[in-house]
Image (tube, rainbow, N blue to C red; front, side, top):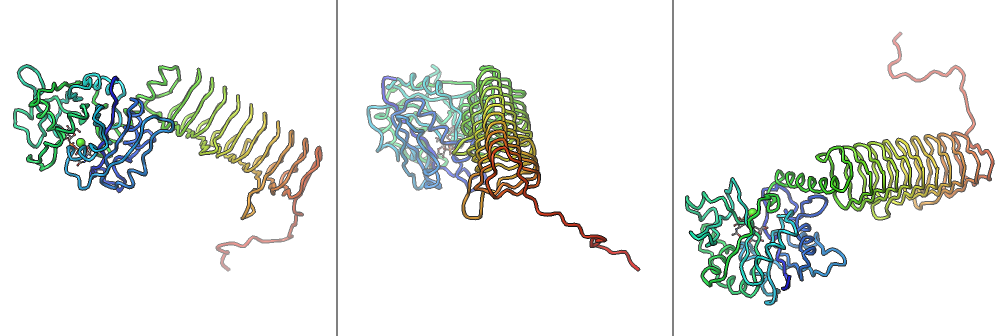
Length: 468
Ligand code: UD1
Ligand code: CA
């Protein structure tokens, strides 16, 4: 684009139909706030700045949005108090817009407009014209109608409540998105009035002024309704979520990822896949997830902030969340079913983590195995260690967390408690049922159990003793 683009995002409205206390534009789609999608789109357009107009719950909205790191786009907020209409909203931003640019007006509740659509709209504006994004809507009710003259040129946008019967029959609607040279916009906004059915200052009235001033009005007419669909209700939010997920799934399928069912697949962040990745139904990916070549994900896994190396297999119903510290799974590792990997779990090659095993802030070297019902927290586990069913690290003394070190080739029997800080020497064995409180020597068998006591002729107390 040969001119700077400044984006104004309207986000001051209340959105009562969401029936929620959360501001409408902060409702999430694909893991991001609705208005964040709009900001991210502006950044991908290389906009000079994004000005978000806030009003209803302004402080919450402002705190909930951010400019992506490293972006050359400045993000700012302007408040609109009270909210007197879309024209009044854009008026609030005018003081921070420079005359050398084009203003692109977007709505904070319209998240799925594509970058190339907006580029086409800006090209149509060309720094000279008023360019409107329009759509053919079989059911246009509620929208502003695009009124064209006999020559086909756009004459005006007429709101539903101000429209004549003939105008109501028009199916070309205004999307709410326009591109306009800022200098012209400034002049036109100064001429707005609120003499209309809603007593609002309509942004759409700038079309009349453009026509009166002989400035060409261009319409970029698209057919993909999802790109201009707004979110006004939970139903619309859910519909757009499916549209968004459908797009993400389609991109991955194109790339060669085998999704068992693109309709039962959710990404709420960034998912990067190598070749030959297979993902079964009902999986959710959050934050940043990287899947190496040949990774297979079983049904109904939730995976967040994790890197899975080539050939790793995640069996069904596994929950992985690296949060800030991340989780890494080594090549050829087998995880689950029903496993839980928490922040700081770092698993080497061919590690096996079986059902109902929880791993937190622990390193497991190549070939280590914990196959059943176990907890490893704050542990350093050596190569080929076998960690028995029901064993746990007692890493927390109520005040501090301590480390457990299990050196290479140790076998920990079933139902052991390793009371940290403690080190199990390489190649040793810990007998089942032991409570280990002191370091164990390398190569030794260590057993630490309470003595067995049997009480002869003992009768178990009964809840309902027999009568008589
Ligand atoms: C607007 C358009 C209509 C178009 C429709 C597309 C006007 C007058 N009408 O109508 O032609 O078909 O969008 O969805 O522009 N907002 C503010 N401050 C305000 C009023 C609104 O920030 O004072 C924000 C809202 O939060 C929302 C956006 O502007 O993000 C659009 O407002 P909305 O009330 O939905 O406009 P519509 O009446 O639907
Ligand atoms: Ca609307």
